[in-house]
Length: 199
Image (cartoon, rainbow, N blue to C red; front, top):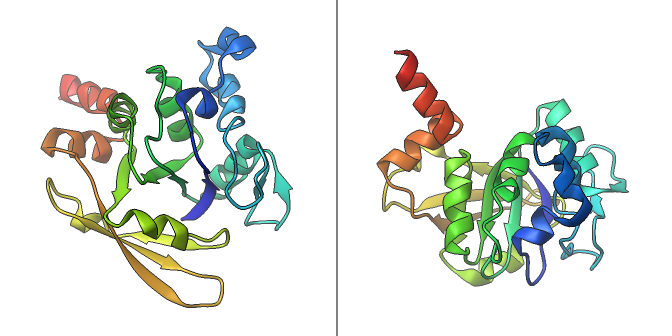
């Protein structure tokens, strides 16, 4: 996986899925996803809506880069600061990342409702065991998560491969129970319900 954005400082649900005129697209997930993370500050350049596309080396708008990764079949992660996803319980702030190919959101800490919304959408909300490990994440890193480690109450290991070829193992924790892990495996809570109703 690659890094889509490492957000700096406050990242509310409004930074993740902006409101205002965008709300007219609420019923059209693909259109409203063009507002994904356009309000979040990129840690590496202190800019808003400007991240590095690892496929081209160019900087572009966050949703465009996410779509490029999705089209190329490359999963991506987001790294966030404290109380990530605070503010209104806007479900699109979890639906849009899933729609555009996110695999995991890794933060120092989550706002509780947003963490639950991510779980419902089949994403992995993970937190650093050591919050200072946030500082180790670099713009050009590649990431691997061993999903065989995913179990209630058990920590996971993020393998980070830096551009210079060096590797680091970063411990992560989560608050997912058995049912929420099933949501993740099914791709979302709705997918799991649909599957059970069909069987």
